[in-house]
Length: 137
Image 1 (spheres, helix red, strand yellow):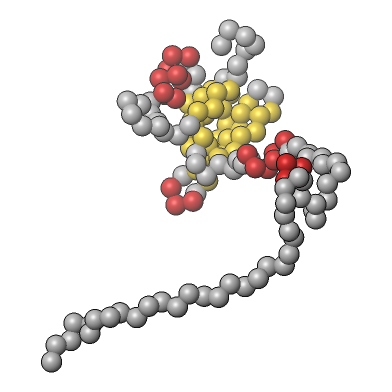
Image 2 (cartoon, helix red, strand yellow):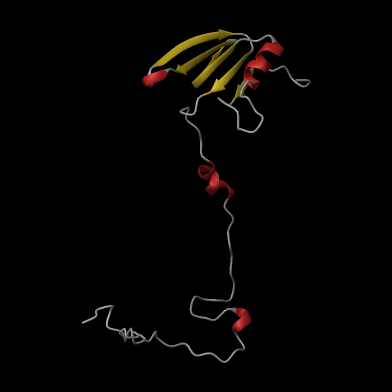
């Protein structure tokens, strides 16, 4: 943390597999000599005190206060903003000029084409089996 001072570090709840043991949040808190709290679902800071809501088994929630810098392990049930909620902000706009829905695409303009209504095609009849179906008299 060479840049600005850091007061709060958020980590995941467990490892992602492979050789990862899931102990990173605990090792980081030990290396920084900071307190750690896990299974956090809500965080609020006021005047240097971090107020957290911790998820406990069977849906129980507990409020706690932590002073100073700390490491927090976020629970899977914590609310998050999915990526698609920013889609409207990132969405582009496609502008077309000189073409309508009825006109053919520009690369097909010179081709010999006919525009006509859809004609229903007759269904093919499935051929019947020529054997007796395994019945022997």
